[in-house]
Image 1: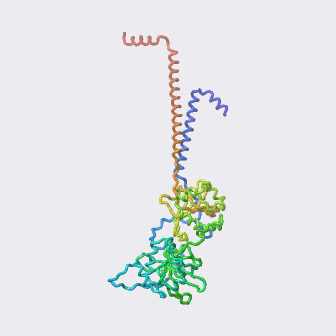
Image 2: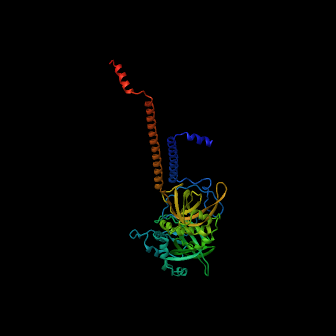
Image 3: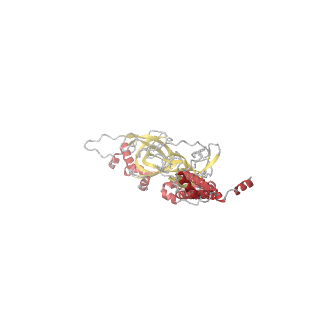
Length: 476
């Protein structure tokens, strides 16, 4: 067959062969241009990840595997005075509030006048509501760092018992084992805070102490049995019955528990189980706390650019704690309510999938407004571990956990590709134009040759004979 085709090729005139070859080249170039244009379109709109294989990663939990939750709409904006929701804390009754008497109409005090604290009584079965509201108001104007910085560390528990009036309204430090914690309502007041957290700390020793407290921000992940520290305002000594015995306890009004020591201890990363199913919450919160102290620009600058997403799968222990960059399409994104020791009451979780099918489960504190599922984004953060999960095909697989600050949309610079496409299209046009020019010249030659052949067979003096015939036709 090949020999027959070659034989047929010999009978095609050289000029026609050149035309045919040029047309074939033009066709190949045009097809290549079409493929390039399609590739540019794909780059501009990254394809969604394979939902069957990769979109089934579960949120790391405290044991077992759970199916991924559906995307939740953004939560309503929470009032700054409203404590975060914590369904794990039950409601209970705090100390009875001692309501203030009716003031003299000619002498109405400022509701936030520090002098209010002078009228607060100690060793009573009630807590002065006016004093509590004043201290809550003071806390609302301070961050936790402000509270810690303003604490008088020279005041001890014994001092509160001996001279309560001298230290009332002063920022003090207490610590102990968290024994009780529940939500309680203090009723309508000028701060806008209705629900607070009330609890007891047990201070072991001889003698042992029970310290009572109000929290504005909630437990943030602390549970009964944990050793906790508090920086807050001393309000009064409250007389109550504890375990059948009458007791008098200092009452502290605080913003939140102090962060635990492990939150800033890098050794928590050494306790992580690589490739396990557990969340490893301490390592997650440690990384989250580190990232909260960095801006997005600082997080990007800290990235080790030599580490690739594929390296995370094989170098989990070696790369743990490294700042890495993962670029991929958003396959899942949700807001997660989880009050925790970092001070955050909620954050965002989800996972990214890149073209090589590497999967990254992420935690971020801030979500840019201009990202949504399937968008191509970059995540700069701290690598914690490879988390194992079961996908929708019932197969075990892994995702790399990275804790970052935010997601940064990735825009593909396709200008160079467009230049290539335009160049190829221009070349195709030139090739087609040359082929057309050859065809026109060939047609002109063929017509000229036909004309010469026609005139070569014509009789001599054909012009004179034509004029004579015309004259006779006119009757001349």
